[in-house]
Image 1: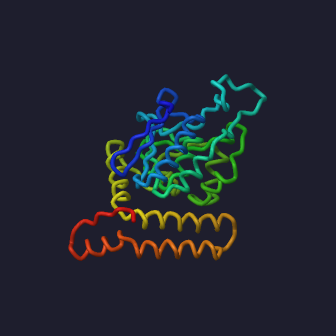
Image 2: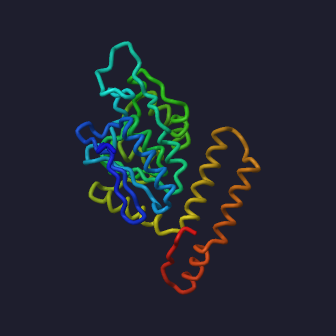
Image 3: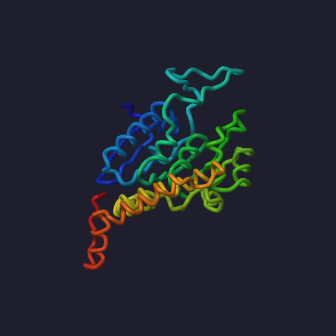
Length: 270
């Protein structure tokens, strides 16, 4: 396991720390592969109920993909006139986050640019400090992003703001990002950690079957809209099944009993 990605678990809340502060937490294949591996493990084990992704230090969440790195290569200088390899050989982090049965929060301080911003938008929500700078500069590198990644931005901020971000390559400050809908909330730097982990604790407190079902339902609705297709009979049956399982669960009984007894419920995820 590379030290470029640190993994911490505190109760039901896990944290990924992108640990390359000397490179403004630039992303490499090992970091992406590590995220996928650990998200898959946490999903299987069932203990984690919320995941926070953050960068080491306060200069950057991530300044983007390390364009000096190609698969299996230590990282030579890019050669003029030759394409930079961007399609690293691993299951995509975006799909791993999308499939995770728990919410994923991007905790943004400093620079959040390029692949770093793409990673943040792939999370379920984003909380940033008021000194954060966000941007997506492929037009300044002469490349075009995958349409799937661009669709995420269109869904978040609409086509006009997506064109502004991608075609200008300019960074926006956190307040502008909030106005666009690119981030959910902006806080002072000293408040970032408490704000993010307070929200993570709220997610972890709630009934896991309910949280998981809502995330999957929303993802299904978004996916079908992206495909330009109606919900299938299988989609609807799956959502109805999730509802029925949640209603019949021990957690649902615990929630009702705890409400009647005016106490805090203890959910087990079953």
